[in-house]
Length: 394
Image (cartoon, rainbow, N blue to C red):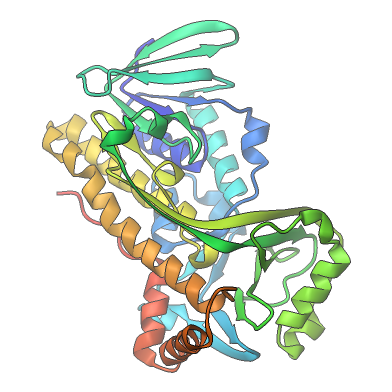
C-alpha cells in the first residue's frame, strides 16, 4: 500500500487532520488499534476554544456543532463561596467558547471520513513505523490477520500518550518535562440539567469542584480527590452531598441530582516532550503533551497541532516548501508551553495541595484575588481561556 500521509490514531486529532488533508486533495490513511465503538466510548473534554471551532468549520464538520453546541460567553469562579463572573466576550473583543463534547466531535469526523471514502483501518494491530529519517518512511501492521506494509511521505502520530508513535523515537532524541499532581478529579456524568448556564470553577477548603455540562439536559461534575482514592468509596449519594458542600448555598439549592451514567477518577499531570518531531514523524496531541484539565486545553492543544501540521503540509505539497517541516516542533511548542503555564496556574490557584504550608496557601489566595479583582487580570484569564491565536505559517 502507498499513501502520502499515514496517520496513527483515529481520535479527534487524527480524524481532523485526515479530513483537512483529504479536502485539500492530499491522500491519507488512518490506522487505529481500537474499534470505532471503543473510540466513541471515551468520555473526555467538552470545552472548545474559538480556534478549534473555526478549524472544525474549515474542515466541513461544524454543522451539527453549530446546531447543537452551546456557545458560552463566560464562566464563573467561586472563591470560598464568593461568585466572580469572567465575561469572556467583553474581555476578548467578542471571543467565546463552545460546549460540545469530544465524543460528538469524533462522531462528526467519523461520519465525514466515511462519506468521503477515505480509508480508516480499525483494529490495526502491531503498528510500527520504520525508516523515519529516510525520504520514504513506511509502516508495518496487521489487519484482519494479514501483515501489511504502507509506504508514505510523512507519518502523523495522533495515538495518545501510550501510543506507538512517540515510543518509536529513540529515547536519547527526546527530552521529557513532567509533573504529577497529588490529586485527581472524580467525575460523573448525569442526565440532569446543569446547575448553572455557565461553567463554574470552585475553590473551597474541602477541595476543588467543577460544574460543567454536555447539553441542557446532561451535566458533568468533578470533585478534587486524593490521587489514590478508590472509586468504590464514592456512591452517587456521597458525590452529590460533597458537591453541595463545595458550592455556594444558592447554587447548592438549585442542584438537580440523579443517578450517574458514568463515573471515573482521572489523575492530573503535566507532560511535554521535546522535540515534537523526528525525521518524517510528527507528534500531535497527547502523544506529545498532556495538561491538567483545569484550563480546558487538552483537546484544544491537539487541534492547534493539527492546524500547524496541516498548513505546513499544504505548503509542502503545493509550493514545495520542505523547509517548513523543521519548524513544526518549534511552532507547536511555543503555544504548548503557554497552555501548560495557564493550566498549571489554574490548577495551582484552585486546588488544595496537601503539602502546602500556610505561607504558600496565602500567596496562592492573594494571587488569585489580585487577578479576579483587576480588569487586566480578568482579561489575562479570559484571553488564555478562549485560546491564544494560532501562529501563521509563512
